[in-house]
Image (cartoon, rainbow, N blue to C red; front, side):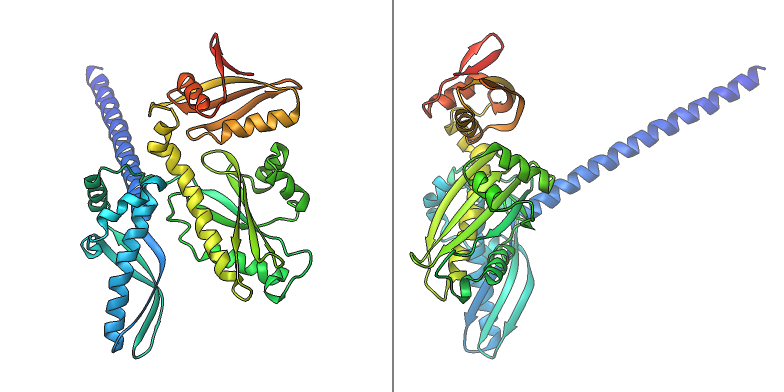
Length: 382
């Protein structure tokens, strides 16, 4: 009897040890996966991909060497601009003499072609993350090296109502606008995006309302693409003024926003203006992310504190006023995870997260001429 009990205890002990060992192995595996995912993300951020190079020399070998040397210098400059705030770009001049070759860890070729004296290619330059961090650190500049959650970007082309030409024709315009975006390094950007075509349900009426900041149009866009983070990038050329109007409207990792810009173009070279517009637009998304992930949060009055939930009651007299107040809130750098709990004829219940909490939010809003006050545990915007 005693022996039988002892055997049962031994078996129970072995089962317990097996469970403990299995749990430990699972924990180690999960930790390894987390480390691997983090390393992959870091590698993406510190890789400048789809970078075009073009060089000529006395022979093919010399042309390729020149293209690689010039390309890695330009790619390092592009990486530094990716990581530091827009306001610090001028201070990067102190790093102009840095040899990029000392920081490159690998180069891969996307496309290439060459002649006896010329080399043209699209290359991916990967840089040593620790070395680049240390390089920026020596300047005293702040930087952001964490990617934003991915945003769906819907490419929309509006052909001119009149005076159109062959290059502004709908089919050609749609293809060109999508292609210039596809030619950018979207997955490794600080604010990565995934391209999507405009769906039939998102017609001109929805897009116009979206560009006006209409909350219902934003909801329709989010529902159609089954994502909270979706932005419509609409381009519309005007042959009469030789300008293209570009509108970014939707919600990215920072919040809801609408941004309108225009660019001049030369007839016959519309694609070049589109390329510039796409590069600037991607830079806008990255800049918005840097504003809430780096020193921009502190500049907004957030004090760099930890994200904290804030319950906010917004009072208004009309739906138009509510839309304006909502835009004020969601466009404030640092605001994230805005949720509308209740929407009435005269007020809305809003829950959001902000670095430093309600007090920091009040300071940041005051800097923009807006006022909220605390009433018990709730903040009120009148």
